[in-house]
Each structure stands twice: as structure tokens, then as C-alpha cells.
Length: 121
Image (cartoon, rainbow, N blue to C red; front, side):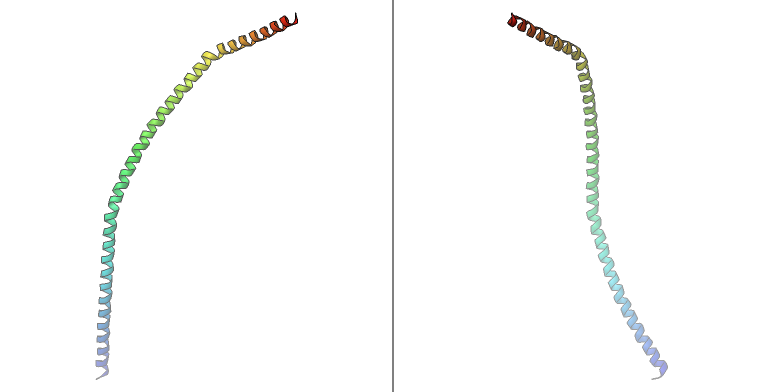
């Protein structure tokens, strides 16, 4: 066997080993890609319903927020009405009430003085 034949044999063996290694790598990459494809499909099948449910939840929350806004507007309106009514009641009753209390206080003092005057006689 000459040196050229030996070199050709070594190159042929190295080429076969390289092809086998590339084949093994290709099979491994194919298995990995299948696994990734399965994981992506599983993720898609589980994510789509979750996203749909999330959308429904957000729509429901928006409806509740709008309803709450309506309730708050009504409460503010009622608060304004009560404030106006209490202001009106204060204006309507404060002056006569003060006069009545002053009259009662004056009458009480007068009655006390009359009692003292009678008891001193």
C-alpha cells in the first residue's frame, strides 16, 4: 500500500465518520424541532382560550366600571340635592329658632326674677 492509497483510505474513513456524525446531529436536531413544535402547539391551544377568557373578563370589567360611574354620578347628584336642602332648611329655620331661643331665655330670666321678688316679700 502506497502513501497515496493510505491517505485516500484515511480521507475516506474520516469522510464516513463525518457523515455519520452529521447524520446523528441531524436526527438530534429533528427530534428537538419536533419537541419545540409540539410545545408551541400546546402553548397555542392553551393560550387562545385563556386570551379569549381574558378578553371577556376585560369587557365585563369595563361594563362594571361604566355602571359604577353611573352610580357615582347619581350619588353626586343626591349629595348636591341634600346639600341644597340642608342649606335651605338652615336659612329657613335658623332665624326663627334663634329668636325663639332668645325669647325662651328672656322669659326664663323674667320668671326667675319674679320668683325671687315674691320670695323676698
